[in-house]
Every structure is written in structure tokens, then in C-alpha cells.
Image: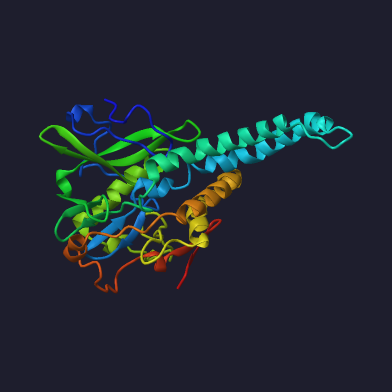
Length: 331
């Protein structure tokens, strides 16, 4: 059963609401019994003894759709330059008069490309914050989904149906994502996307197991700590990296680091992805200037004691530095 709206843009998936749904209709449902290799999937904002806070997929994809314009821009410039060389220069007569029809045509092509990239941003993203985070509270066994500053959804975390979903990536390849379905009396009320979408299902399945482990056993096994024999840490099974969202927006260094750290153990793909990451960096930085930080409703802040100082808390301030085949503790 396809629960997505038929027409959507990359990075702005819309899901149907208030439709009948059966468990059999859900693609790859997940349970507590599922055991996968733990993976934080670069999707955390913070973790402490009381709760974990994660990003949603829209934070992960911020700037990706708009980046298409910057990916196409060099090609457009080359094509326009070549056409201009063939047709534009000969159109300048001895009196210096220019064929303005050609100038208008070039401007129209550039404007059309820019409009095609900005339109989905304006239609689906206008007025929305950088992120719609999710909180899992281990003490109360509650999960909180951010909707806006005035609205949130609170459920017992096991009253939510979790599943591994697929969507189409920018290059047409299938992308796997962790979904949370809100189903009441056989009716699908809402759908939330948790963490980064990835090619291959390992990271999203690992994120599900990471969340389950925390909710059942706490954070002790998930904190970075050296192996007793080898003195090394496990960079994915232990929380070694958090996204920056608390108190201020990410700075340009944070943005670039979040793009590149995922290649720490496979540098070859990082070389191929470098130009695409640069385009995404430019697009994301532009969008960040116009977006606000999410602010949880005061009831959620109080219920989770979010302003409480917790010495054991892990956040972006504790991030390890990831380089090619190398991990360094910032401390």
C-alpha cells in the first residue's frame, strides 16, 4: 500500500492522513525482537540518562532539493557560453547593436532553472523550522513528536508503529528511512520520519536497534568508551557524533563536518561525492539563513526537564573528530 501522496518533490515527502490501514499494508514493520547492529546513524541531537533527542528526516535533507540548481549551474554556464560564442558574438554588428532576443532567451533559461529549484522549497518548506525533532524519554517511556511551537504529539513509545520505508533518492536509487506511524482504530493519523535516510537498510535498522537498546537498557553501553583490550571505540555503535541544534544554528564548519564525517572509513566515495557535497553546502547555508530553530512547547520542556544540567549528557560539544581512517576525541 502506497501511503505517500502521488506528487511530491525530493526531500519533501508528503504522507496521506486519515486513511484506513492494516498491519499487512505496512512496508517492513519493526518490533522490539528485531536485532540489528547498533548504529547511531548520525541522527542524534543529544543523549542523557533521561531522554534522547533525534533529528527528523527533513533536517537531514535540508538543502538537498535546492542543491540541484547549483549542480546544474556549471553545465548551464558552459552551454550558454558555447551558444553565446557561436551565436551571440556574431549578432553584434559594426554599430555595437546586440540581438536582445538571445539575451532574453538566456535569462529565461537561467530563471526557469532557478524557479524549478526554489518552487518546492517555497511550497513545502516556507515558515517551517530547521528541524522537527523527536524525543524518547526512558523514564516515562513516552515519545514526543514536534509539530510546531504550539503543537506536539505525545504517545507511549510502544503505541507507535515503526517500520522501514523506502523512497526514491536524488539519483533514482532507493533510500531507506525509519518511519513512525500514528495509527488509531485502524486509521493512519500521521507519519513521522526519524533520522537520516540512507542507501542500504543497515543504518536505519541499526538506528532502530540503538533506540530500542536505550529505551530498554539505558545509555551505559552507548557511551563512547575504549575497548578494554584494544583501547579503541566503536564509532557507530557508541554515540560519537551529535548534530548541532541546541542554542544556535549550525555554523558552516558543522555543516561541512556533518556531510563528510560519514566517509571516515571509506574515503574513496568521499572523493566522488565532494562536488555534490559542495553544492549541498551552498544550498543548505542559504536555507539556514531563512529558517528558525525549533522550540518545544513548554509542557514538553517541563515534562522532560530539558533545561536541567546533566553531567552525563552527550551533545555536539562532545563530538569526536572524524578524518580518513582516523577518529580523534575533541577533549
